Image (cartoon, rainbow, N blue to C red):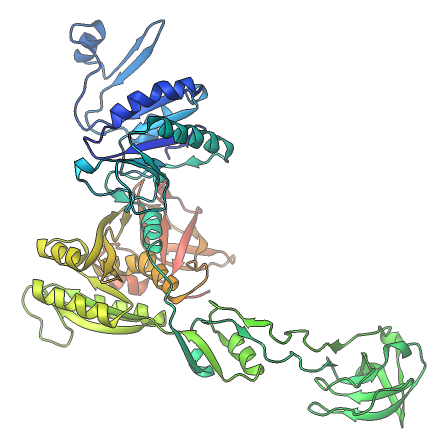
Length: 592
């Protein structure tokens, strides 16, 4: 795993060609040096370049075949390395710097990678804003105003820009330094799973749509508004067990006069006097002036007189009594907003005398499949066609999350049909899911329609399976274009769609359920990519949770998802796991 020693603040300048990145840096560097900063610059060039002059010794030796040429003098040194196959990554380039001699690293280019950047923008270039799709932009330097809360500086105000960079460098040095892995800086054009998920969640809003339902219909749903207790729980100070109620001031007496009996649902109508006791049942209200209950097993009653066996334990004032409001006081929150109604919450709300709960209205999610080659189950299979499995997998996944599914069926490869379907879905649902070609924008008309109806980003996620993903909004309704492969559509749903649904539903800080298991076989993946293997986990004879794959991992083999009970997640910085190594597993339907 390639590590970045982030002991030095890192700041990029992101812009389209022609904006003047190099010119600005050239003017700013002397001012940064005047402020006492030791600065390094990394520049990403999209074209071939040469630092050596033809005829110089170093040039001749490099051309003769030296793959690395190190030139050194009293005043400077330079290492020139040939990279005929793979371009050096930004983490590698940063590690080549002597950071002990630096206060700041400035990066020109690498605008698609994830690290703090200032966006440079000129209206005359006529290019889109970068900050709208890059949450690593921390400020904007432009000659026009942008619609954003980010700090904005005139691109021609060199002093103000320099002040901002100096302040950024100073503040970064005061904060804890992080060590980043190769996963933090993704390959060109690819997003990590976490980056994709965070970008999606940043655009998802909780839907505020209350619905009041009967108790039994609230099970599994999210509480819309805090449920306040209308009563004290318990309503009265009551006995925690069967026994005798006495006054705490009388605990040293040798015997007591039994003056009555109290069953649950009844009460003793008089204040208890000195030396008196009342036989009491569990849950019954404690008489006035009584504050202590002695358990029945410790008592011996003879006629109207009761004595207590102190050999079984000393009597303490206040014992075995539950105070009124001890569990819940009037107007105290019984079930908080955003909490899921499960069996305990349902019972507790019923115990308060409430017969209705206001929940978040279940989400309506529209789904459809695309492609002329896709046909519905139950039909005679046509030549070169496949049966649609993705809608049924999505239906099951959505139903498990408490969603109402709007099934729009299979949509033919037609511009007019797709546009009508998307418009219909945006009017009927809170979220739209498609599977098939729409997710990768293979056809020009698909991109045209999506751009016409909303704003959609086509992303390549650095994961397997499930790399192509489209996300955005159709008429302000969240839209996901999922891959066509059956396994890929389920994996991308679990990693991206479910977190978005949970946020829309109003879950507070929802996190996916994961476990740590021991690999029962070697697990291989590709370094730099998040791999999801279909696996089966169980407890071994030693009580350890172990996991192994279920065989073939092809993204079109739906049977592998049926046989698996979990996904095995291999992170991008891990190339493989040996037998006995710990790995993360994500349960599918099974819950431990």
